[in-house]
Amino acid sequence: MVDISNLQELERYLAEKEYITEGDGHRIHYCKGGVSGTVVFVDRGEKTPMIVKQALAQLKTKEVWECDPNRMGVEYDSNRIYHELMPDNAPEVYFYDEENYIYGREAVPDDCSMWKADLMSGLLDFEVARKSIETLVTVHNRCANDETIAGRFADKGIFYNLRIDPYIHFTVGKHPEYKAQAEAVIDKMMNSAITLVHGDYSPKNIMVVGRGISVLDYEVAHYGHPAFDLAFFTNHFILKSVRFPEYSGAFLAMLRYMLRIYFGRMDFMDKAEMEETTVRTLALLLLARVDGKSPVEYLVGDDEKQQRVRDIVSRVVRENAVTFDHVLRIVEEEEKGADK
Image 1 (spheres, rainbow, N blue to C red):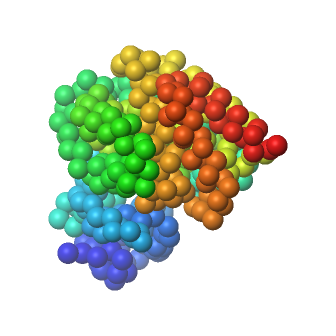
Image 2: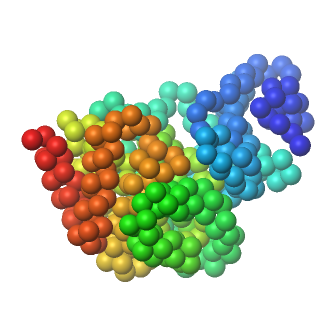
Image 3: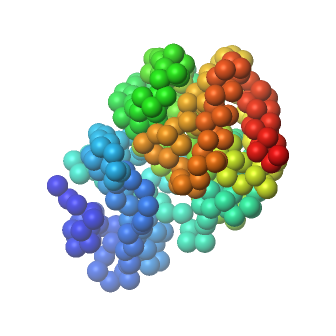
């Protein structure tokens, strides 16, 4: 099997596929971060730069975390759908090598920034927020009730291994008081077939280009319940409001703005059911980012803020919250309580 973490192997591989040539002035840069595989940026001189990815069977985490490397094929196909539906907001795909689990796509421009980094620096661009939530709701709307897409993404094995097990099963093992809620959410996530679910829709995977966006990292895509996407996405804004109490009002205002757009445009299922399922899933994902296999790095070591997240989750579950208005009111009240 080709190992693209070996530079000589990678260059030989790309040359054989004619994506690079000896005299084109190409440069190869290995990207840091991420736990699921090897990611390489290939500057191809006058040609459009590209990203080449290869999945790992054992992820680079302290805890044992294994997953089918054929998720690169899932990423290729789901990225292609996003590009077809929202060509300005998702990169073009080039190839997928099923034998070696290698996938190639257009790279985002050098001058792009990760939306997560912008948010962490206090830069909250509502135009970027609008495009991000519009992309998500458009894909959800357009892919709902599509038998062809449903068939291609019917396998939820990768989703289970990379999301349900480490984010919910593992976390509830530490918090058995949420077992009933977790079982209900898992049942919906694993047994629903409503639309194409990205599975990793977050500011970390949205690159900002000027005031445009490029959505990346589709390897957890499946045909399931879209509440997972909306919960996974909104989770990050609540966590950042906890991390940066001085910006909390701004993060929650941006979140409310995006939720109005999403629920104003979604047309593929009952909105109240979608909101309730999203909120119940969100509570578990919030807890997972402090006590799961993949805790959010900007709260690690801050016991007070981690406990605030646990307190928010406790109230959401205890008060049986089923709307975002209720959840965000709890977040605001907990923030005010912490200021006293």
